[in-house]
Length: 50
Length: 223
Image (tube, rainbow over all chains, first blue to last red; front, side, top):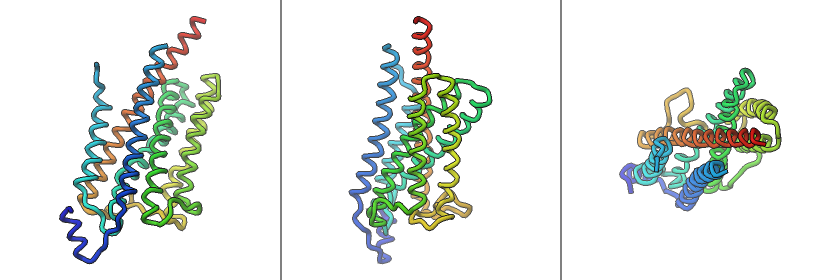
């Protein structure tokens, strides 16, 4: 655990377990950007082939 | 094989930002890992607004000087803006569920007006596909592109004007950013890298539109 987090926890904070949402959000967002980049590549390839 | 520098730099910057956010930025004590969604949600929202603002500017100038390159730029920026808004509309609810206890609130003006913005620019794309004449298509979509962007300041100010669950701006506000330095650096890096990604997408989308229009003109000439 990173030092700043342990510092915060020592003050009595309790950290909720929310990593599933974090992983899902990053996976979906990066997936959308990658899919869009691929769609641009394929569309340009198709128009050049015509 | 020729490697374009802009997509390479943008891709590396986004990857670097994700690595920094995941491994080198502290967890927020009250929200846990879900707070890190902030580093993709906020820059995606910034880029979406920037993209639609540029659609409005390019559309306005197009209506004035009728240069088809402006219509192609507006078309490209609108499509890229829709992609970024889609990410905003998915990552926001994924943060909201563990923090607010619900994915969505229909009474929340910030959420619903952002959804409206997405619908307006999806309509823009549909409109461009539905009009046959290139001049009419460019003119109609320019008007819609300008009108849609009028929603942007309203969305930004909605957290001040209405009762909303959405957090107040942490950085884009008159006073100093209310964020620890490690988190602020990650946020700034994410804003830069996602803006680079926007330019890489728009350049590629603009090149596609140029090649598509050239191919259509050639077909028309040959026929």
